[in-house]
Image 1 (tube, rainbow, N blue to C red):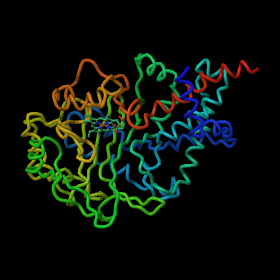
Image 2: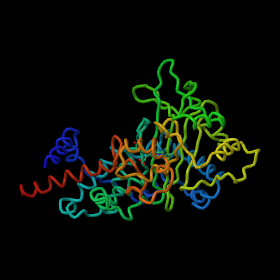
Image 3: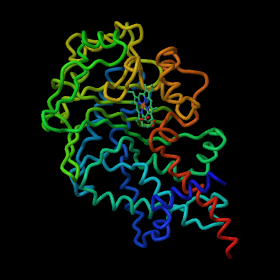
Image 4: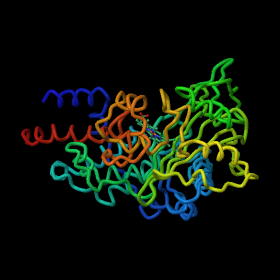
Length: 411
Ligand code: HEC
């Protein structure tokens, strides 16, 4: 009961309740064209290269595909949105997810909510269309740390009852994000006078020195230059520079992981193989697919390839399966990790402190496939972080669970 009051008070103070009463579903609908307007939908032409067999068999192909994904992320979609922001700036954040779900859930009515009814396709289409239209008008970029594309948002909303059960009982069997779901995590540095950004050198010798150090080591600095760095200005006129960007995309079974981080010079080391038309040549990139690296000590990499020095330094390690971002993976030993090893624990009992402890004392458990994995299909921020995504949905469920019975008493 106490918990319910707490939820109620926080909902009143956040304006939730009054908003919930005012808003209703849009009258206008054009669900036929809607299906073409998915936010963050992976383009058809990229899917053939996102073939698991290719990604897990060929490291060069994997990198090539990762660069193509990054180019897609940053492509300006002026026609679709009427503004010049890259598509990903309009993906969903936790607040939009909260509102989308709340409106749909409210629309079910008391009995529908009690039965945890599914939303009709029409209601979903109308509500997402309205979100799309609002985003269409969005001109101001955002600094949001975690964003998800529409495929991921739809999964959480459409199958909310299954995710709720997973949340309440850890019974998450068969709960998986669909093909094409994607999440982003970004890191920004604020600009001010005489301001510089720390540099984390990753040329072959510096990279080996990094791995020998206890954690990522900054050395030198990067002077912010709008020509070199993806930069946004907020409405108040303050500029922020993108220094790191993680992307995870669900393929048929597993996720494809890629990350970008800002470096000092253009097209060097982990950016040496970037495509020529790359608009962001100052960002380095690495990628991961699956638990095994397609780059083995024996893998032939031609010397004339620009990426060969990086490949050779990775091949010289006992395990070439590496991918880490100096602006996003903080703390001891986190620079020795790759994405999937840590994310396999997502949704599990592990706290931030437990992860830090494992990084220090049990690194292999964060690097290799474990028999026991977390229940939330590799997505950490459903239940953790400063604004957990699924808890934003649970807010509405808890609220109506508490107040629907009271409504019936009043009848
Ligand atoms: C040591 C653990 C760890 C490693 C290594 C790691 N992550 Fe994460 N990641 C997290 C946690 C915890 C979150 C939850 C959000 C937060 O705390 O920022 C997260 C959040 C994310 C998100 C947002 C969606 C989600 O799962 O919450 C993406 C995308 C992401 N990470 C991608 C990557 C990529 C790409 C790599 C590899 C380059 C990587 N991560 C390496 C722990 C890790």
